[in-house]
Amino acid sequence: MELIGFGIVLFVCLGIGKVINIMARRLVFNGAGLYLALFAAFAIWNIYLSWNSTLDSFQMGYALGRNITPPLIIALVGTYFFFKFRTDKAHQLRVQKLRQSRAELSMTPDN
Image 1 (cartoon, rainbow, N blue to C red):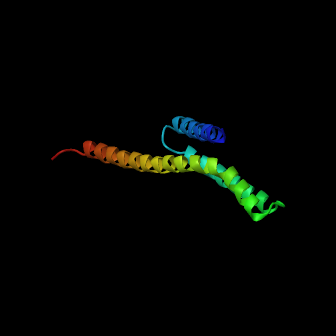
Image 2: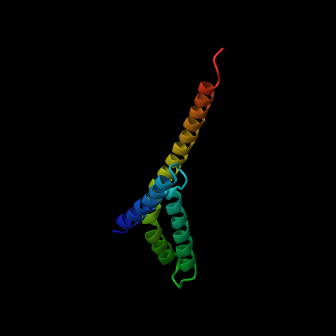
Image 3: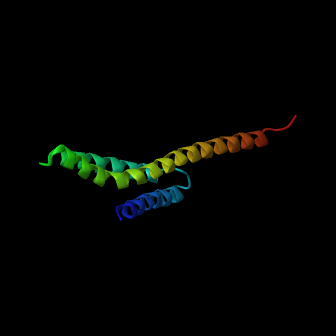
């Protein structure tokens, strides 16, 4: 059940990124990066809470693994989308440079 919840959070973050990128008309915001930042904050918070708990080491490890495993699985999917965004952005910049160079070539008079 937690896996579905964190999956929904990932898709909401990706949707926020998509809306921002559509409004900017170019790739500006990485929604997967937002999810990975939220996951890092969640993991740090869980580690802090488990460190300050009164559980023994086995119980603490079990509770920590049970709390962090579902968002970690979704974070692996988010990592794929994070690097996919980076390659799409690099491709967009390359296409933009090619279009600019083609426009400059068409503006120069032929000899």
